[in-house]
Each structure stands twice: as structure tokens, then as C-alpha cells.
Length: 382
Image 1 (cartoon, rainbow, N blue to C red):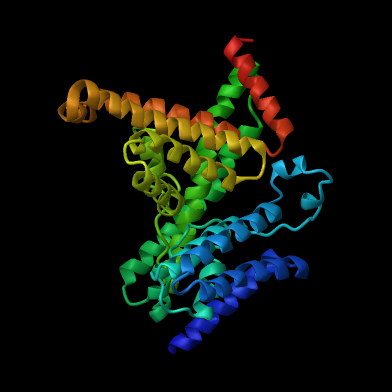
Image 2 (image 1 turned 180 degrees about the vertical axis):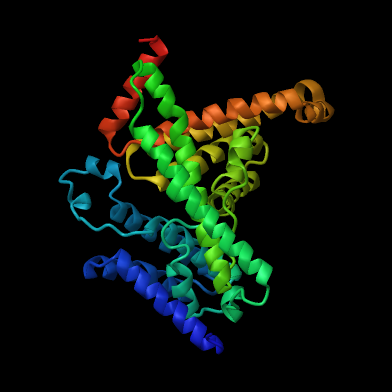
């Protein structure tokens, strides 16, 4: 019903502000979040020009330090006095805002974003469709949407598909995921090892249906408003190895880490030590997946989660290199075309993913110790 573009923009900006207020009713928390977000737009103005990349690097270091403190990372307790984790702020969506902000400042410094629009930037960072849990949209795509902000009204079939996807998403989140979560917390009476196995499979199912359903809802709803959020899942539990898994699971996060962490790090190594690059690529995997792990949460279990995924990704690359060394590219093609091998690889990869997700569950170091104890008991058959 809002015909003028300025009216649609004003409505979306007001809706973003209202939704943000429902998530941060504490004025202090809202002020801190506003300072965090606005610093990105201010930094973007400063990093344009010949020295932009150095300025962007310095800003990202400062922003990361602020992020670590605001998220109250567990390792801060190693600093005497606990002064850095004494605050009680809970800033919803900070992790996704953090990554979008780095992307924005880096791309401005590299000339990939030319026009700095404060209103577009604020809605990009705070729009309710991606504030809570992504997907991580690139600013360039959002700017194209913002230029027209055309609601999905002309194509009746497309409108029906969008509403149907919202319905499917609600069913995944509110029915399937809730049933799985109830089963997870109410395991039947059985041997402790069997209880662990029961929960071992249920939690990955819950994470998938809850998160994929959420993405169905926000992607379709944003599309109705004329905003094209990226797809986040592509049948991840059918991946044949951990490299493919991360290209199917939380894809907007994977591609962000690839573009802003893995590729720049690997290119720097390739330029300075080209002979060592094929070997040091594994260090790049560990850095990238370690960051993916600790981005998910502030306790030590997320470190283990990231390192396990790095081991899985590195193992997949090493196995590919072994096949090429022994059978050549032709042998690799034959290996990849084998259906029995494909399904064995999928089953093995799925179980490895389930192992890594064990370390997404705990909320404290004590919970982590209990899980390690359960794993040890299961391995010993007790």
C-alpha cells in the first residue's frame, strides 16, 4: 500500500527500530549496541583512500577486542580480577552484526562499496529479518534491494510460494524441532551409553530443523518486502566430506569466512612462501574453523567444536591428495563417481558431524567435563 519508495524505506526503518527495541528494552544495552554499529559507518568514512586498508585493519582489531569483551569470552577469566566479564549486557544478534560490520568496512576500504548511505547501512545491520541469526547478507546485494525495495505483489504464484515457505518453516521450528527437543530432554529409561547415543543423533536433527526452519521463515518474509537474503542450507547431512558439508551448512557463514579469513590468509602465504603454500593450507583451515567455532559461543567447548571441524576438513583434503598421488586425477574421478563409496562417505561424514555437535551443547566448562566423561564411559563400554 505504500507507493512512494521513501515511505517503504521509512516503514522498514521504523520496523527495524521497533523490533530492535523489543530485543533490547534496556536503554544501556541499546546505547552500547548503537555505538558498536555506528562505529562501523564512521570507520567506513575514515578508511576510504590510499591508507584505507591499514585503517580498516586497525579498526577490525579494535572492533574484535570490543566484541570479545561484550561476548564475555571464557578465556577473559584468565585475566586477574574478572573485570572484563563483570558486565551483564546481553546484546542480541551481536555475532551477525560483527561479521556484517567487518565485511562493510573491508569492502569500503577496497573500493567494492562506493556510496555510503547511513539509512541503508542502519537497516542493513538491524533489519529484523537477519538481526537475530542471519543469514549473513552482503551489503552490495542489500543496496540493490534498498534502491527499489519492491514488495513481492505482482506475481501471485511467487507470493503463494513465499507464504508456503513461511508455513513450512513454522512447521519445522514449532512442531518438528520441538518434538525432537522434547525427546532429547526426556530420553527413555535405558543404559547410560544408549541414552547418550539417543541424544547423539537427536541434537543434530534439532539444530537442523530449528535453524533451517528459521531461515525458511526469514528468507521468505524478507522476499515479500523486496529483500533477497541468501540461502543458508543445501541438504548438509548428505555431504560426502567435511569440505562439502561446510559448503552446504550455514553457507552464508562459510562463504564469509572463506572470503574474509581463509582466502586472504592463504594468498598471503602463497605470495610470501609459494613452495610451502600446499602444506600451510592446512594451517589456514585450522584458523578459519577455529574462528567459526569461537564465533558460535564464548566457552571452551566451542574451541573444541572448531578444532574438530578443522580436523575433519583437513582430513578430507589429505584423503583427496592421497587418492590423487596413488591413482591420479582419473582415479579420483572414479572414486567420486562410485555410488557405494558416496553413501559410505555420507554416513561417515554425518557421524563425524554428530561428534562435533556434541560440543555445541554445553553452556559451561562443567557441562563440557560431563560430556567428556560420558564419551569416556561410552568408549570403555560402561
